Length: 115
Length: 112
Image (cartoon, rainbow over all chains, first blue to last red; front, side):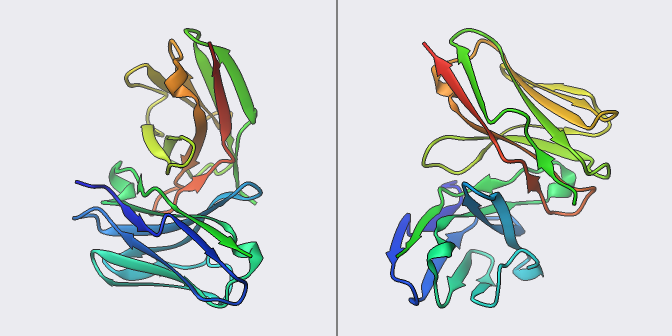
């Protein structure tokens, strides 16, 4: 298995632009998570899905952020409009079930820079 | 609020020595804990996990110890190697469900 695949690896954009981050989870994993990592706040859970349905989006910073999972093999995290404070590394992770000792498998992340 | 925190932001060890990375957690409802390793430019990678009905679990060169009385978790790495240099995160599940809360991380530096 190729693992969790994220694209792009790096994204540089200007303030006000729309940014779309993409994720392909590991096949067969029912849970998909979006995390944001910064030096100041560490790893923060933004939202997670179970069987393509958003379960908890309490970590989403504000209405500028939205996430979708149209099918079991694809998810997007969109920021519109983007702001410099959104600059961070965004990770996607998947698992089969945390509650039964299954661990998270992380992608390589998308380094986002908003100028 | 509840949080997971690490005592030492940076730990430097000599190659071949044992490393101990500590983590304090405050959510007494947490019953599942994981250690992750994150190398530069990569996502966190699973190292070892432990459930609250255990106080020790061993893997290859790594041991996790859990002390529920004082809400403390540690990761021991035996015979530390240069390839062990990374940031190590502890994570807890907050008592169930599918949300992990991560600690702030400890940078492990292995000196030759």
